[in-house]
Length: 340
Ligand SMILES: Cc1cc2nc3c(=O)[nH]c(=O)nc-3n(C[C@H](O)[C@H](O)[C@H](O)COP(=O)(O)OP(=O)(O)OC[C@H]3O[C@@H](n4cnc5c(N)ncnc54)[C@H](O)[C@@H]3O)c2cc1C
Ligand code: SF4
Image (cartoon, rainbow, N blue to C red; front, side):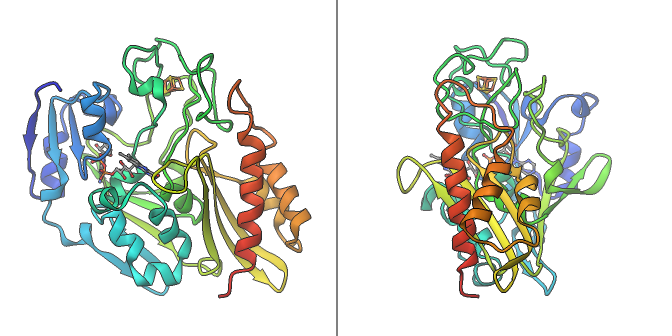
């Protein structure tokens, strides 16, 4: 590992000031000299691999603001401080009861030890597990812009079929983010230019020609909170994750579903898809296909076909299209049948 400076700011404003310098707005956070570290389960891993190369780390764990570590629920929303640990959020009774999808998506991620260390802010910003991104001897447009993409003609079984570009087909592997995008979450951000609230759907960027720019964040911006509105569909919600082994593995395909039903008819539905796309993926066409329909197997299948209509498979990952569809159909029917 390369040498780096480690510092412990004591407030969000101090951390932002320490991360702010003339060039900070012009490089993606993941390429900046100074980077934030929270649980370190993603960043430290990538620093060891030589993929992350910051000269200076600012530890967010020493920030004093209590709200960063709190989960607050009201009638309208659940609000998570960015430093809340995944495990704490997954086990929170209010979260489990009022929006099971959120708790499930966290519980099915990583391992108990990792969930105790990893934060929600860090979780949504985790970087891809693309093998060619992680191993620095391969060409990779995300790690080294303009160098090419070894995955295009390589072993791309884990890679995405939705939201890909000719520059990058890396999957976004997180689970919690699929719940957040389905549920219209927002993120609170603080940086040199002040505070802002962003729709979670706008946080991650499609790879396009610049897969190295992964989010809308500037290098001096900190996520301080994530807020999930509570709506009629929140209680009837679940996360289905399909993987190579039943625990401690990333999704091959997953579906985050929240349903508001009137009898057997869909009043409103929210759908996120994981394991199959380059960014957290909202399946809007599938939602539209279900609106006002009786939710039976045929309707769920039609919605799943709509969700994957634009999918673009590569040599080794075409199986993700039928798998993704089956995952969504099952998740829809299981969510419909939940006792709420
Ligand atoms: C073996 C293994 C298995 C895993 N399995 C899964 C899985 O099945 N599902 C899943 O979803 N995840 C999985 N993960 C990923 C894991 O959930 C993430 O590593 C973790 O959530 C990252 O959180 P962290 O706090 O450790 O982030 P860090 O590693 O500290 O940071 C990650 C990134 O976010 C930035 N950052 C952190 N916090 C903030 C903030 N508040 N504001 C701005 N920038 C910030 C950092 O600068 C860094 O770029 C796995 C990880 C491992 C190692
Ligand atoms: S898929 Fe993306 S991350 Fe993987 S090698 Fe290609 S450019 Fe890099």
